[in-house]
Image 1 (cartoon, rainbow, N blue to C red):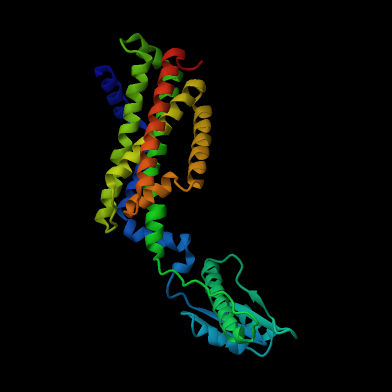
Image 2: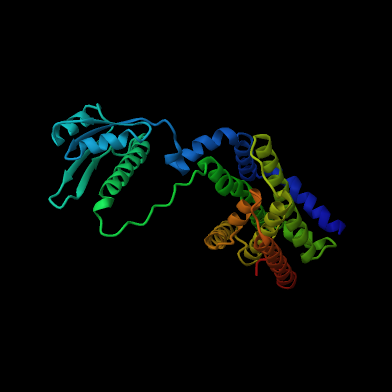
Length: 348
């Protein structure tokens, strides 16, 4: 056991030379420390419709201008200015007197079509499009209500809109899983670099001359890579708490991410064993991680979903079973890779 701890300590001491790893940790630290400020800007990209107070001026022309004006009265920040015809409305848009143009045409059958003109790829385009979408959606709902009595059958009622805060959704479904899983990826990359550099520089042979086995070398390197991940995640979660973001079930979250770190480190050790070239190993590792986590994310009980449910304290028995299952899979994967490396060695 002493030899394993010595190797682990050697690995941790060498982290100071890994500038890329330190930079990644620094970025995570910045995000966690200033999450309460960053989340406002990040939510605007995650859900532009969450921005309150965005005001747009719409130049309207055509057969349903009055209806659009009534709809605009129900949409905060949207205002409609009527114009005589489509040419005048577009002229106002070109003079920057309006943010967008809506030209409506009512057919003989009573249907209304709308031609919308919005800025092309400007900074404010997203906000304008979101507000236009809300304006036209409100107009559509008003039209449905007005025409409902003339229908032979009653339309199905629309579900009530959710009042869930986009900031809450983003924080617990994106930000927290991101901060929890980034250390997992870093640990895998770290052990790939460690093993391939040892093989490239010939220091792996020096380690083998020492009274340690290959299995003990793997244990020491894996212990360092796996051990730093929960520490990082715990620090990020504590910083989130300090910023006013409450996180429940910290223990199970750390247990889940430790299991995933063990699984990823096992994959990384296996890749380094069969692809001793550093660049090739990192490429294979990146592809493997994308496939593993991409596939897991598509599952209903994926790691990101499990972390989100644990963080908001809505986990059920199934979530607990998933955590245990991930731990069992990780243990089996690590023991399997460890045994293969102990028998076959590295770089063969």
